[in-house]
Length: 533
Image (cartoon, rainbow, N blue to C red; front, side, top):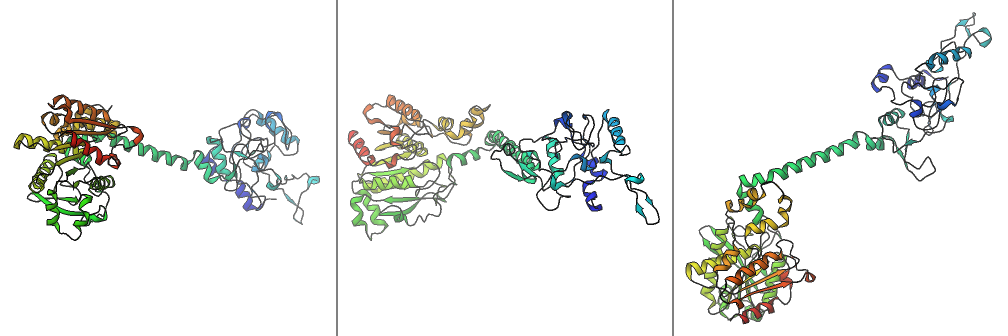
Protein backbone atom coordinates (compact mmCIF):
# COMPACT_ATOMS: atom_id res chain seq x y z
CA UNK A 1 0.00 0.00 0.00
CA UNK A 2 1.20 3.53 -0.80
CA UNK A 3 1.61 5.79 2.16
CA UNK A 4 -0.38 8.99 2.53
CA UNK A 5 2.67 11.04 1.48
CA UNK A 6 3.19 8.93 -1.63
CA UNK A 7 -0.49 9.15 -2.49
CA UNK A 8 -0.23 12.93 -2.35
CA UNK A 9 2.76 12.83 -4.62
CA UNK A 10 1.00 10.56 -7.06
CA UNK A 11 -2.28 12.50 -6.93
CA UNK A 12 -1.60 16.18 -7.58
CA UNK A 13 -4.29 18.58 -6.46
CA UNK A 14 -7.04 19.93 -8.66
CA UNK A 15 -5.40 23.29 -8.74
CA UNK A 16 -2.30 21.88 -10.38
CA UNK A 17 -4.45 19.88 -12.81
CA UNK A 18 -6.41 22.97 -13.72
CA UNK A 19 -3.21 24.97 -14.22
CA UNK A 20 -1.38 22.49 -16.39
CA UNK A 21 -4.36 21.21 -18.33
CA UNK A 22 -4.68 17.88 -20.05
CA UNK A 23 -2.25 16.59 -22.63
CA UNK A 24 -3.24 17.56 -26.13
CA UNK A 25 -3.05 14.19 -27.81
CA UNK A 26 -5.00 10.95 -27.68
CA UNK A 27 -3.52 7.60 -26.82
CA UNK A 28 -2.80 6.73 -30.38
CA UNK A 29 -0.91 10.00 -30.94
CA UNK A 30 1.37 9.63 -27.95
CA UNK A 31 4.91 8.31 -28.11
CA UNK A 32 6.39 5.03 -26.95
CA UNK A 33 4.96 1.54 -26.47
CA UNK A 34 1.77 0.87 -24.59
CA UNK A 35 1.74 1.38 -20.86
CA UNK A 36 4.67 3.79 -20.61
CA UNK A 37 4.73 7.27 -19.19
CA UNK A 38 4.26 9.93 -21.77
CA UNK A 39 2.76 7.41 -24.14
CA UNK A 40 -0.75 7.58 -22.69
CA UNK A 41 -1.01 4.06 -23.91
CA UNK A 42 -3.47 2.61 -21.37
CA UNK A 43 -6.73 3.85 -20.00
CA UNK A 44 -7.84 3.28 -16.43
CA UNK A 45 -8.61 -0.36 -17.24
CA UNK A 46 -5.19 -0.83 -18.73
CA UNK A 47 -6.49 -1.11 -22.31
CA UNK A 48 -3.68 -0.43 -24.77
CA UNK A 49 -4.24 1.46 -28.04
CA UNK A 50 -5.03 -0.40 -31.24
CA UNK A 51 -6.86 -3.08 -29.25
CA UNK A 52 -3.90 -4.49 -27.36
CA UNK A 53 -5.15 -5.32 -23.80
CA UNK A 54 -2.88 -4.70 -20.84
CA UNK A 55 -3.45 -5.14 -17.08
CA UNK A 56 -7.12 -5.75 -17.64
CA UNK A 57 -9.86 -6.59 -20.06
CA UNK A 58 -12.04 -4.30 -22.07
CA UNK A 59 -12.62 -2.81 -25.47
CA UNK A 60 -10.03 -0.57 -27.12
CA UNK A 61 -10.18 2.99 -25.90
CA UNK A 62 -10.25 6.04 -28.12
CA UNK A 63 -10.64 8.48 -25.27
CA UNK A 64 -8.05 10.83 -23.84
CA UNK A 65 -5.95 10.49 -20.72
CA UNK A 66 -6.77 13.27 -18.32
CA UNK A 67 -4.55 14.54 -15.57
CA UNK A 68 -0.80 14.64 -15.01
CA UNK A 69 1.28 11.56 -14.31
CA UNK A 70 3.05 11.27 -11.00
CA UNK A 71 6.75 11.88 -10.53
CA UNK A 72 8.79 8.96 -11.72
CA UNK A 73 10.64 7.09 -9.05
CA UNK A 74 8.43 8.13 -6.12
CA UNK A 75 7.09 4.69 -5.41
CA UNK A 76 10.14 2.90 -6.61
CA UNK A 77 12.70 4.17 -4.13
CA UNK A 78 15.89 6.03 -4.90
CA UNK A 79 16.95 3.96 -7.88
CA UNK A 80 17.00 5.10 -11.49
CA UNK A 81 14.01 6.96 -12.84
CA UNK A 82 11.13 4.60 -13.75
CA UNK A 83 7.82 5.16 -15.47
CA UNK A 84 4.46 4.32 -13.98
CA UNK A 85 1.61 2.75 -15.96
CA UNK A 86 -1.58 4.61 -16.43
CA UNK A 87 -3.38 2.29 -13.93
CA UNK A 88 -1.14 3.50 -11.12
CA UNK A 89 -1.48 7.23 -11.73
CA UNK A 90 -4.86 7.48 -10.06
CA UNK A 91 -5.83 10.52 -12.10
CA UNK A 92 -6.24 8.95 -15.52
CA UNK A 93 -9.82 8.52 -16.67
CA UNK A 94 -11.46 7.55 -19.91
CA UNK A 95 -13.78 9.86 -21.77
CA UNK A 96 -16.10 9.20 -24.64
CA UNK A 97 -18.65 6.48 -25.35
CA UNK A 98 -16.39 3.72 -24.01
CA UNK A 99 -16.65 4.97 -20.44
CA UNK A 100 -19.89 3.07 -19.77
CA UNK A 101 -18.42 -0.11 -21.22
CA UNK A 102 -15.41 0.26 -18.93
CA UNK A 103 -17.59 0.82 -15.89
CA UNK A 104 -19.62 -2.25 -16.75
CA UNK A 105 -16.46 -4.26 -17.14
CA UNK A 106 -15.33 -2.98 -13.76
CA UNK A 107 -18.56 -4.14 -12.09
CA UNK A 108 -18.27 -7.56 -13.73
CA UNK A 109 -14.77 -7.86 -12.31
CA UNK A 110 -15.88 -7.04 -8.78
CA UNK A 111 -14.78 -3.43 -8.83
CA UNK A 112 -18.19 -2.07 -7.96
CA UNK A 113 -18.38 0.00 -11.10
CA UNK A 114 -15.39 2.11 -10.14
CA UNK A 115 -12.47 2.53 -12.40
CA UNK A 116 -9.17 1.51 -10.85
CA UNK A 117 -7.74 4.98 -11.35
CA UNK A 118 -10.59 6.57 -9.39
CA UNK A 119 -9.40 5.23 -6.06
CA UNK A 120 -11.05 2.65 -3.77
CA UNK A 121 -13.73 2.97 -1.10
CA UNK A 122 -12.53 2.30 2.43
CA UNK A 123 -13.77 -1.19 3.59
CA UNK A 124 -16.24 -1.39 6.44
CA UNK A 125 -15.12 -2.52 9.88
CA UNK A 126 -17.07 -5.49 11.32
CA UNK A 127 -16.96 -7.31 14.61
CA UNK A 128 -15.63 -6.20 17.91
CA UNK A 129 -12.08 -6.90 16.87
CA UNK A 130 -12.29 -4.10 14.36
CA UNK A 131 -11.01 -6.35 11.58
CA UNK A 132 -11.53 -5.57 7.95
CA UNK A 133 -13.83 -7.62 5.76
CA UNK A 134 -12.13 -9.99 3.42
CA UNK A 135 -13.27 -11.26 0.07
CA UNK A 136 -15.40 -13.98 1.60
CA UNK A 137 -17.39 -11.41 3.59
CA UNK A 138 -18.28 -9.42 0.55
CA UNK A 139 -15.75 -6.65 1.12
CA UNK A 140 -13.84 -5.01 -1.63
CA UNK A 141 -10.21 -5.79 -2.08
CA UNK A 142 -7.91 -2.92 -3.15
CA UNK A 143 -5.60 -3.68 -5.98
CA UNK A 144 -1.96 -3.55 -4.87
CA UNK A 145 -0.01 -0.64 -6.34
CA UNK A 146 2.34 -1.38 -9.17
CA UNK A 147 5.91 -0.68 -8.15
CA UNK A 148 7.67 1.82 -10.45
CA UNK A 149 10.97 -0.05 -10.15
CA UNK A 150 9.48 -2.99 -12.00
CA UNK A 151 8.64 -0.99 -15.10
CA UNK A 152 10.98 0.03 -17.93
CA UNK A 153 12.23 3.60 -18.22
CA UNK A 154 10.56 5.34 -21.13
CA UNK A 155 12.77 7.09 -23.67
CA UNK A 156 11.58 10.61 -24.39
CA UNK A 157 12.60 11.73 -27.83
CA UNK A 158 14.92 14.74 -28.07
CA UNK A 159 13.50 15.70 -31.41
CA UNK A 160 9.94 16.05 -30.15
CA UNK A 161 9.62 19.65 -29.01
CA UNK A 162 5.81 19.81 -29.17
CA UNK A 163 3.78 21.37 -26.39
CA UNK A 164 2.54 17.97 -25.22
CA UNK A 165 6.06 16.61 -25.14
CA UNK A 166 7.34 19.54 -23.09
CA UNK A 167 4.41 19.22 -20.67
CA UNK A 168 5.12 15.53 -20.14
CA UNK A 169 8.77 16.22 -19.42
CA UNK A 170 7.90 18.90 -16.89
CA UNK A 171 5.50 16.49 -15.17
CA UNK A 172 8.02 13.66 -15.10
CA UNK A 173 10.35 15.81 -13.01
CA UNK A 174 14.08 15.88 -12.57
CA UNK A 175 14.49 12.13 -12.70
CA UNK A 176 13.31 11.82 -16.30
CA UNK A 177 15.93 11.22 -18.95
CA UNK A 178 16.11 13.10 -22.20
CA UNK A 179 17.23 10.76 -24.96
CA UNK A 180 18.49 11.98 -28.33
CA UNK A 181 17.31 10.21 -31.49
CA UNK A 182 19.09 6.95 -32.07
CA UNK A 183 19.45 5.89 -28.43
CA UNK A 184 16.21 3.90 -28.25
CA UNK A 185 17.05 2.15 -31.50
CA UNK A 186 20.50 1.15 -30.24
CA UNK A 187 22.22 4.28 -31.60
CA UNK A 188 24.83 6.45 -29.97
CA UNK A 189 22.53 9.13 -28.64
CA UNK A 190 23.38 10.88 -25.40
CA UNK A 191 21.04 11.11 -22.39
CA UNK A 192 20.85 14.32 -20.46
CA UNK A 193 18.82 15.79 -17.68
CA UNK A 194 15.40 16.78 -18.95
CA UNK A 195 15.59 20.14 -17.19
CA UNK A 196 18.22 21.93 -19.29
CA UNK A 197 17.80 20.41 -22.78
CA UNK A 198 14.01 20.55 -22.56
CA UNK A 199 14.13 24.30 -22.25
CA UNK A 200 16.83 24.58 -24.91
CA UNK A 201 14.73 22.50 -27.29
CA UNK A 202 11.80 24.84 -27.18
CA UNK A 203 11.38 26.21 -23.68
CA UNK A 204 12.11 29.54 -22.11
CA UNK A 205 15.90 29.34 -22.18
CA UNK A 206 15.75 28.44 -25.86
CA UNK A 207 13.51 31.42 -26.54
CA UNK A 208 15.53 34.07 -24.72
CA UNK A 209 18.66 33.86 -26.94
CA UNK A 210 16.45 34.20 -29.99
CA UNK A 211 14.84 37.23 -28.41
CA UNK A 212 18.23 38.79 -27.72
CA UNK A 213 19.34 38.16 -31.28
CA UNK A 214 16.17 39.76 -32.60
CA UNK A 215 16.69 42.79 -30.43
CA UNK A 216 20.32 43.03 -31.53
CA UNK A 217 19.32 42.87 -35.20
CA UNK A 218 16.68 45.52 -34.68
CA UNK A 219 19.17 47.81 -32.95
CA UNK A 220 21.73 47.30 -35.71
CA UNK A 221 19.14 48.12 -38.34
CA UNK A 222 18.14 51.30 -36.51
CA UNK A 223 21.78 52.34 -36.26
CA UNK A 224 22.34 51.51 -39.93
CA UNK A 225 19.31 53.51 -41.08
CA UNK A 226 19.93 56.51 -38.83
CA UNK A 227 23.66 56.99 -39.55
CA UNK A 228 23.27 58.75 -42.96
CA UNK A 229 20.79 61.20 -41.44
CA UNK A 230 23.09 61.85 -38.48
CA UNK A 231 25.94 62.55 -40.89
CA UNK A 232 23.81 64.98 -42.86
CA UNK A 233 22.69 66.81 -39.75
CA UNK A 234 26.18 66.86 -38.17
CA UNK A 235 28.91 67.12 -40.86
CA UNK A 236 31.57 67.31 -38.17
CA UNK A 237 30.77 63.67 -37.42
CA UNK A 238 31.77 62.79 -40.98
CA UNK A 239 35.10 64.56 -40.55
CA UNK A 240 35.87 62.29 -37.63
CA UNK A 241 35.25 59.20 -39.75
CA UNK A 242 37.36 60.51 -42.64
CA UNK A 243 40.38 61.78 -40.72
CA UNK A 244 40.34 59.18 -37.92
CA UNK A 245 42.77 61.36 -35.98
CA UNK A 246 41.38 59.97 -32.71
CA UNK A 247 42.92 56.59 -33.62
CA UNK A 248 46.47 57.57 -32.80
CA UNK A 249 48.06 54.14 -32.99
CA UNK A 250 50.46 52.86 -31.85
CA UNK A 251 49.43 54.12 -28.45
CA UNK A 252 51.79 55.32 -25.77
CA UNK A 253 54.52 56.54 -28.14
CA UNK A 254 57.20 58.86 -26.74
CA UNK A 255 57.64 61.15 -29.74
CA UNK A 256 60.60 62.77 -28.05
CA UNK A 257 62.60 59.58 -28.64
CA UNK A 258 62.29 58.79 -32.36
CA UNK A 259 65.61 56.93 -32.30
CA UNK A 260 63.68 54.02 -30.77
CA UNK A 261 62.00 53.63 -34.17
CA UNK A 262 64.40 55.06 -36.76
CA UNK A 263 68.16 55.43 -36.53
CA UNK A 264 69.64 58.93 -36.27
CA UNK A 265 66.30 60.71 -36.14
CA UNK A 266 65.38 63.83 -34.20
CA UNK A 267 62.02 65.24 -33.14
CA UNK A 268 61.03 68.91 -33.36
CA UNK A 269 57.93 71.12 -33.60
CA UNK A 270 56.85 74.04 -35.73
CA UNK A 271 54.15 76.62 -35.08
CA UNK A 272 52.20 77.49 -38.22
CA UNK A 273 49.54 79.63 -36.53
CA UNK A 274 48.94 80.92 -33.02
CA UNK A 275 48.00 77.90 -30.93
CA UNK A 276 48.82 75.40 -33.70
CA UNK A 277 51.95 73.30 -33.18
CA UNK A 278 52.69 70.16 -35.21
CA UNK A 279 55.35 67.52 -34.68
CA UNK A 280 57.98 66.31 -37.15
CA UNK A 281 60.61 63.58 -37.25
CA UNK A 282 63.74 64.31 -39.22
CA UNK A 283 65.63 61.20 -40.36
CA UNK A 284 69.10 61.76 -41.84
CA UNK A 285 70.51 59.97 -44.90
CA UNK A 286 72.62 56.93 -44.00
CA UNK A 287 75.75 58.71 -45.23
CA UNK A 288 75.47 61.27 -42.41
CA UNK A 289 74.79 58.92 -39.51
CA UNK A 290 78.31 58.84 -38.14
CA UNK A 291 78.63 62.62 -38.29
CA UNK A 292 75.31 63.07 -36.48
CA UNK A 293 76.43 61.37 -33.27
CA UNK A 294 76.34 63.85 -30.41
CA UNK A 295 75.16 66.75 -32.56
CA UNK A 296 72.37 69.14 -31.53
CA UNK A 297 69.25 70.23 -33.38
CA UNK A 298 70.94 73.14 -35.20
CA UNK A 299 73.39 70.74 -36.84
CA UNK A 300 70.51 68.69 -38.23
CA UNK A 301 68.92 71.82 -39.71
CA UNK A 302 72.15 72.74 -41.45
CA UNK A 303 72.44 69.19 -42.80
CA UNK A 304 69.41 69.83 -45.03
CA UNK A 305 71.67 71.78 -47.37
CA UNK A 306 74.02 68.83 -48.12
CA UNK A 307 72.49 68.28 -51.59
CA UNK A 308 70.75 65.06 -50.60
CA UNK A 309 67.09 65.07 -51.71
CA UNK A 310 64.54 65.98 -49.04
CA UNK A 311 61.19 64.18 -48.76
CA UNK A 312 58.28 65.81 -46.95
CA UNK A 313 56.21 62.73 -46.11
CA UNK A 314 52.45 63.32 -45.78
CA UNK A 315 50.75 60.23 -44.36
CA UNK A 316 47.17 58.99 -44.69
CA UNK A 317 44.31 59.09 -42.20
CA UNK A 318 44.52 57.55 -38.76
CA UNK A 319 47.61 56.61 -36.80
CA UNK A 320 50.67 58.82 -36.40
CA UNK A 321 54.26 59.11 -37.61
CA UNK A 322 55.23 56.07 -35.52
CA UNK A 323 52.80 53.71 -37.31
CA UNK A 324 54.50 50.59 -38.71
CA UNK A 325 54.39 51.14 -42.49
CA UNK A 326 55.31 54.83 -42.05
CA UNK A 327 58.34 53.94 -39.97
CA UNK A 328 59.37 51.42 -42.66
CA UNK A 329 59.08 54.11 -45.32
CA UNK A 330 61.16 56.56 -43.29
CA UNK A 331 63.83 53.94 -42.62
CA UNK A 332 63.90 52.71 -46.21
CA UNK A 333 64.28 56.16 -47.76
CA UNK A 334 66.84 57.17 -45.14
CA UNK A 335 68.86 54.10 -46.06
CA UNK A 336 68.53 55.15 -49.69
CA UNK A 337 70.22 58.52 -49.11
CA UNK A 338 67.23 60.84 -48.54
CA UNK A 339 66.34 63.26 -45.77
CA UNK A 340 62.85 62.38 -44.55
CA UNK A 341 60.59 64.79 -42.69
CA UNK A 342 57.62 62.77 -41.38
CA UNK A 343 54.83 65.11 -40.34
CA UNK A 344 51.82 64.72 -38.06
CA UNK A 345 49.18 67.23 -39.13
CA UNK A 346 47.25 69.37 -36.69
CA UNK A 347 44.98 67.23 -34.56
CA UNK A 348 47.14 64.10 -35.02
CA UNK A 349 49.38 62.51 -32.39
CA UNK A 350 51.09 65.23 -30.30
CA UNK A 351 50.12 68.07 -32.66
CA UNK A 352 47.57 70.60 -31.45
CA UNK A 353 44.45 71.92 -33.13
CA UNK A 354 41.63 70.26 -35.05
CA UNK A 355 42.05 68.60 -38.46
CA UNK A 356 40.71 70.37 -41.53
CA UNK A 357 41.65 70.58 -45.20
CA UNK A 358 42.54 74.26 -45.06
CA UNK A 359 44.48 73.73 -41.82
CA UNK A 360 46.53 70.91 -43.39
CA UNK A 361 47.40 73.14 -46.33
CA UNK A 362 48.48 75.94 -43.99
CA UNK A 363 50.73 73.64 -41.94
CA UNK A 364 52.50 72.07 -44.92
CA UNK A 365 52.95 75.43 -46.65
CA UNK A 366 54.69 76.65 -43.52
CA UNK A 367 56.88 73.53 -43.40
CA UNK A 368 57.81 73.89 -47.08
CA UNK A 369 58.99 77.45 -46.58
CA UNK A 370 60.91 76.41 -43.46
CA UNK A 371 62.69 73.65 -45.42
CA UNK A 372 63.44 75.84 -48.44
CA UNK A 373 65.03 78.42 -46.15
CA UNK A 374 67.54 75.77 -44.99
CA UNK A 375 67.92 73.38 -47.89
CA UNK A 376 69.91 75.50 -50.32
CA UNK A 377 69.88 73.76 -53.69
CA UNK A 378 68.65 70.43 -52.39
CA UNK A 379 65.66 68.88 -54.16
CA UNK A 380 62.43 69.05 -52.14
CA UNK A 381 59.80 66.39 -52.83
CA UNK A 382 56.23 66.05 -51.63
CA UNK A 383 55.38 62.40 -50.98
CA UNK A 384 51.72 61.89 -50.21
CA UNK A 385 50.07 58.62 -49.28
CA UNK A 386 46.28 58.11 -49.48
CA UNK A 387 44.77 61.14 -47.71
CA UNK A 388 48.18 62.81 -47.97
CA UNK A 389 47.99 62.83 -51.78
CA UNK A 390 45.21 65.44 -51.62
CA UNK A 391 47.24 67.53 -49.18
CA UNK A 392 50.37 67.41 -51.36
CA UNK A 393 48.53 68.52 -54.52
CA UNK A 394 46.68 71.24 -52.59
CA UNK A 395 49.98 72.68 -51.38
CA UNK A 396 51.67 72.32 -54.78
CA UNK A 397 48.77 74.11 -56.48
CA UNK A 398 48.68 76.85 -53.84
CA UNK A 399 52.42 77.46 -54.25
CA UNK A 400 52.07 77.88 -58.02
CA UNK A 401 48.91 79.98 -58.01
CA UNK A 402 49.79 82.25 -55.08
CA UNK A 403 53.57 82.41 -55.22
CA UNK A 404 54.52 81.13 -58.65
CA UNK A 405 56.66 78.39 -57.06
CA UNK A 406 56.91 74.98 -58.72
CA UNK A 407 57.63 72.07 -56.42
CA UNK A 408 60.60 69.96 -57.57
CA UNK A 409 58.56 66.70 -57.63
CA UNK A 410 55.33 65.21 -56.29
CA UNK A 411 54.90 61.49 -55.58
CA UNK A 412 51.35 60.21 -55.13
CA UNK A 413 51.07 56.79 -53.47
CA UNK A 414 47.61 55.14 -53.72
CA UNK A 415 45.89 58.37 -54.80
CA UNK A 416 42.21 59.13 -55.47
CA UNK A 417 40.66 61.56 -57.92
CA UNK A 418 38.78 63.52 -55.22
CA UNK A 419 37.32 62.89 -51.79
CA UNK A 420 33.80 62.38 -53.11
CA UNK A 421 34.94 59.60 -55.45
CA UNK A 422 37.05 58.05 -52.72
CA UNK A 423 34.08 57.97 -50.31
CA UNK A 424 31.96 56.27 -52.97
CA UNK A 425 34.41 53.40 -53.44
CA UNK A 426 35.97 52.67 -50.05
CA UNK A 427 34.67 49.45 -48.41
CA UNK A 428 33.20 51.30 -45.42
CA UNK A 429 30.47 52.90 -47.56
CA UNK A 430 29.67 49.74 -49.52
CA UNK A 431 26.73 48.90 -47.27
CA UNK A 432 25.17 52.30 -48.07
CA UNK A 433 25.60 52.46 -51.83
CA UNK A 434 22.10 51.06 -52.37
CA UNK A 435 20.68 53.17 -49.57
CA UNK A 436 18.06 55.70 -50.81
CA UNK A 437 19.64 59.15 -50.89
CA UNK A 438 23.24 57.88 -50.53
CA UNK A 439 24.62 60.67 -52.75
CA UNK A 440 22.74 63.39 -50.95
CA UNK A 441 23.13 62.13 -47.38
CA UNK A 442 26.79 61.09 -47.47
CA UNK A 443 28.64 62.13 -50.63
CA UNK A 444 27.24 65.65 -50.81
CA UNK A 445 27.93 66.06 -47.10
CA UNK A 446 31.66 65.92 -47.86
CA UNK A 447 31.36 69.46 -49.19
CA UNK A 448 29.38 70.59 -46.15
CA UNK A 449 32.18 69.23 -43.96
CA UNK A 450 34.78 71.18 -45.97
CA UNK A 451 36.47 68.09 -47.44
CA UNK A 452 37.19 68.27 -51.17
CA UNK A 453 40.83 67.22 -51.78
CA UNK A 454 40.46 67.67 -55.55
CA UNK A 455 43.44 65.82 -56.93
CA UNK A 456 41.85 65.72 -60.38
CA UNK A 457 41.56 69.53 -60.44
CA UNK A 458 44.94 70.20 -58.86
CA UNK A 459 47.03 68.13 -61.27
CA UNK A 460 45.59 70.12 -64.18
CA UNK A 461 47.04 73.32 -62.71
CA UNK A 462 50.34 71.99 -61.40
CA UNK A 463 53.50 72.05 -63.46
CA UNK A 464 55.53 69.79 -61.18
CA UNK A 465 56.71 66.31 -62.26
CA UNK A 466 54.29 63.70 -60.91
CA UNK A 467 54.96 60.05 -60.11
CA UNK A 468 51.91 57.93 -59.33
CA UNK A 469 52.33 54.60 -57.53
CA UNK A 470 49.40 52.22 -57.10
CA UNK A 471 48.97 48.55 -56.29
CA UNK A 472 46.53 46.38 -58.21
CA UNK A 473 45.32 44.74 -54.98
CA UNK A 474 44.49 48.01 -53.24
CA UNK A 475 41.13 47.32 -51.58
CA UNK A 476 40.68 50.81 -50.13
CA UNK A 477 41.18 52.97 -53.19
CA UNK A 478 40.97 50.96 -56.42
CA UNK A 479 43.77 51.30 -58.92
CA UNK A 480 41.25 52.61 -61.45
CA UNK A 481 41.28 55.94 -59.62
CA UNK A 482 45.06 56.13 -59.86
CA UNK A 483 44.87 55.34 -63.58
CA UNK A 484 42.20 57.99 -64.11
CA UNK A 485 44.26 60.58 -62.24
CA UNK A 486 47.27 59.72 -64.38
CA UNK A 487 45.24 60.25 -67.57
CA UNK A 488 44.01 63.63 -66.34
CA UNK A 489 47.51 64.80 -65.38
CA UNK A 490 49.08 63.41 -68.55
CA UNK A 491 46.54 65.09 -70.81
CA UNK A 492 46.89 68.43 -69.01
CA UNK A 493 50.72 68.50 -68.85
CA UNK A 494 52.80 70.16 -71.52
CA UNK A 495 55.70 67.85 -70.65
CA UNK A 496 54.20 64.37 -70.97
CA UNK A 497 57.40 62.64 -69.91
CA UNK A 498 57.23 64.24 -66.46
CA UNK A 499 53.99 62.38 -65.66
CA UNK A 500 54.64 58.72 -64.85
CA UNK A 501 52.54 55.88 -63.51
CA UNK A 502 53.94 52.68 -61.97
CA UNK A 503 51.49 49.90 -61.05
CA UNK A 504 52.46 47.05 -58.76
CA UNK A 505 51.04 43.59 -59.49
CA UNK A 506 48.82 41.72 -57.07
CA UNK A 507 51.55 39.12 -56.59
CA UNK A 508 53.56 41.70 -54.62
CA UNK A 509 50.79 41.92 -52.04
CA UNK A 510 51.40 45.60 -51.26
CA UNK A 511 47.71 46.48 -50.94
CA UNK A 512 46.93 49.99 -49.77
CA UNK A 513 49.61 50.59 -47.14
CA UNK A 514 52.66 48.53 -47.99
CA UNK A 515 54.20 49.91 -51.13
CA UNK A 516 56.65 51.41 -48.63
CA UNK A 517 57.92 47.89 -47.91
CA UNK A 518 59.24 47.57 -51.47
CA UNK A 519 63.07 47.53 -51.16
CA UNK A 520 63.35 49.02 -54.67
CA UNK A 521 61.46 52.16 -53.70
CA UNK A 522 64.56 54.42 -53.23
CA UNK A 523 65.85 53.31 -56.63
CA UNK A 524 62.48 53.99 -58.29
CA UNK A 525 62.45 57.53 -56.91
CA UNK A 526 66.04 58.23 -57.93
CA UNK A 527 65.37 57.03 -61.47
CA UNK A 528 62.30 59.25 -61.69
CA UNK A 529 64.23 62.31 -60.50
CA UNK A 530 66.92 61.62 -63.08
CA UNK A 531 64.36 61.33 -65.88
CA UNK A 532 62.66 64.66 -65.17
CA UNK A 533 65.76 66.86 -64.88
